[in-house]
Amino acid sequence: MKNIILGILFSAALIGCSDKQEPTAKPAPEKQIMGNVSAGKAIAERDCKACHGLDGKGVAPGIPHLAAQRERYLLASIKEYKEGKRTHAALKDMMGQMKDADAANVVAYYASLPPIVNAAASDIRHSSVYEEGKALAASCTKCHGEDGNSRTPGTPSLAGQQPHYLVAAIQEYHQGERKTALMQPMSAAATKLQLEKLALYFAAQTPVERPAPSFGDPAAGEPLSAMCGGCHGAHGVSSDATTPSLAGQDPQYLVKSIKAYRTTRQHWGMQRYVAGLSDKDMENIAAFYVVQKPRAADQVPSSTKELAAQCNRCHDVENNPAMVAPKMNGQDKDYLVMSLRSYRDGKRQSSTMHNMSTIYSNAIIESIATWYAGQPAK
Ligand code: HEC
Ligand code: HEC
Ligand code: HEC
Ligand code: HEC
Image (cartoon, rainbow, N blue to C red; front, side, top):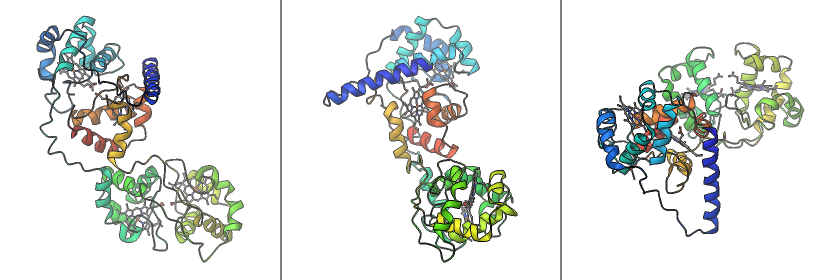
């Protein structure tokens, strides 16, 4: 499968090149049906109708629509079930017994059908995780600042922070591992999905620079920060999803949390590094990080639409006729959620999709699936 995908990517790259040379030549979407549609219909009637309908509409949530899907993609999926690369047990059995010619015809039948208009498509609210995160954040911003840039001494900024770290931190308050009277009631009500939405919202905000604090000496803190930079980034902008950025953080909060690792806050790495610091050292390091230029965590798209544009580089058939990526507009939402989770969790093989989806939390998956399910199918 890797080779196939590499081959596909490679030919897609070639097409991209020839596109550049002839910008006016827009590739036609594949319309020509290769297999025998009427022979395929007979097979669909006998073997597939119960679940995919004769109109190619999944009869229940979680069953994909096949109507108007790309013929080559459908054929490739059948092959994957056959070879056990996609692990759905019933389909593996069914496809295992199917002759190649029958497979070619049945997919031709489904590909030839007009696309499904999701009955629900018009009802699906295009709410994005960011909008929902913003609504939830209303209860946080009086302390953490409107855009996650705190103006309250002792309260940390959340803007641009690593989203995984934010989720973990809120959970620590939730479970009482980090104790503070202020945060505990805030985190008690949130579900895991809500926490992710909050984290993505704050992570997508732009952090602002801060003036030097009234204590500590940034220049004296710089050499001391050498031992921190390996994890927190040379200038306090972390590139690791579970390690917080420190640049531009609230000064009092920084000192307080460094101290906390010596007493109440548990973490194997941090405890070791801060154990030998004097109070003066801590103030100097904190001052150094406060004045560093903050930058938002990478790879946090700021809207579902922006994310979908990244997906459409491959999934929009008109952009990319040579790539065997499925059409997703108007696909069943539950099926999309399920397949994205399978890629992320390594249960469905695809080097392309696995790499794409590993960074995606359940909240992002929910949001992008809702988006595609609500798009009119072509
Ligand atoms: C018992 C219900 C059932 C029957 C019968 C059935 N399917 Fe499916 N089909 C499913 C489900 C459920 C999935 C999603 C499975 C998964 O998660 O991989 C699926 C997935 C597929 C896919 C992959 C679609 C995609 O977007 O990746 C293809 C292609 C497919 N079926 C073709 C067929 C054909 C052709 C037949 C008849 C020969 C058939 N199926 C019969 C339930 C069924
Ligand atoms: C009443 C003020 C207040 C409210 C409201 C509040 N927080 Fe906090 N938050 C704090 C303070 C103070 C801290 C620092 C606590 C400490 O020292 O551990 C904190 C810490 C945090 C941290 C840890 C940051 C880090 O860098 O480790 C996160 C994450 C966080 N809050 C998220 C939230 C979210 C999400 C909400 C809304 C659901 C919220 N907070 C509501 C005051 C508040
Ligand atoms: C081995 C990697 C590593 C090194 C080295 C390291 N840190 Fe950390 N640091 C972390 C991780 C991971 C966390 C998050 C831990 C947690 O969840 O409590 C963290 C958390 C912190 C926090 C809390 C931030 C917040 O938003 O609550 C501060 C402050 C901090 N580190 C400062 C430092 C300083 C100062 C040094 C150098 C003296 C240092 N760290 C060295 C990995 C490291
Ligand atoms: C580099 C190209 C590429 C990009 C970018 C890409 N995909 Fe894919 N995607 C593919 C390919 C190729 C497949 C078919 C893989 C397979 O056979 O399992 C696929 C399959 C899928 C499927 C399975 C659909 C089905 O019918 O079974 C879903 C869902 C999906 N992608 C969602 C996304 C989302 C959401 C994004 C953006 C966040 C995205 N993809 C970005 C190439 C890509």
